[in-house]
Amino acid sequence: MLYFGRGVESFVFDESWEIIRKVFPVDLEELARESGSFRRARMVGDAETLLRLLLMHGSGLSLEQTVLRAKEQGVGTISAVALFKRLRRSEAFLQKLALNVLKQVQQRCEQAQWPGGYRYRIIDATTVNEPGATGSSWRIHYSLRLPDLYCDHFELTSPEQGESFKRWQAAANEVLLADRAYSHREAVGALIDNGVKVVVRLNSRVFPLLKSDSRPFEVLGQLRRLRVGQLKEWNLHFGLGERIWPIRLCAIRKSHLAAEQAKRKARRNAQRHQVQIQSETLEFSQYIVVLTNLDAQLWSAGKILELYRCRWQVELAFKRLKSLLKLGHLPKKDPASARAWMQLKLLLALITEKLCYDARFFSPWGYRLEHQSVGGLVGND
Image (tube, rainbow, N blue to C red; front, side):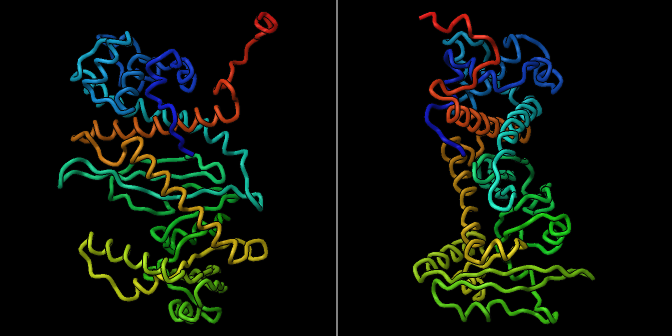
């Protein structure tokens, strides 16, 4: 989970840099040169100094503020233009560092399991826009692990790369939670074939359901029979080509207030995208309807719907990224610098998660001690 108290920026500036430095690989210099971001030592003496400068900039300082603060702190002397050029070349370097930190977080996540011996993940994506009405957009695909709420995977793509389960690798002991953008028969069928469990919001337009006798199941007609607060489940099937898969449909009718809020949101989305909203879409907004292949004996409809509520945590993570780390709007106007800047922001988010995790379990100093003898210090008050 992303927590923000004392910012990463302060760690970059003061003596606590030694703490954050331990998050990164020892061979930082070699990694920077292999990725092409550090070719010569002019103005920036080494890869560690370059990383500190980039983290300063990514933590909220402008390029001009970064170089001024770096000079005052004795970190390095470089012009804003030169630092911008270094940033443009640093995408691969920052990506490698982010993946390294991500691996450390993943190792922590492997220890956490919920009921049934499964590992639970929330899958979603968000867009980031460049300045201006015609600015380009980028999409960040993101996965949070439950119950820890740590990011266990991310990917940066163009907006044309849509949201789909096909993008994610999942093991047979994992449960994936996702919204209706991931409700596609081919991808869900492939996950079921591989033993993966899913809890996904139904998109009735692209995911037709079948009764046991292969006749179409009229979802909306069945939902209309529910009272407010009433939940129900159906054992159904879905098909694609010659294949047929079993699936459960779990649904609950929202309160009148929640239903009206959902309708207003649906109308706003339609207006923003300049499309005519369908009456069926408005009616569906009165319900929460999810598909799952989790065992009904262990997971009742009520438990499935409670589990699906956890999906909101990834929305909160996106809000934190966009508001506190300023990820929502790109200050860079060319593709190379934009990608590097987003990799930098994702790296900062992962560093924050790693430090907060260590602080949580290694108090009171808030970081892991090195594996070294401290016998000479014990008892020498």
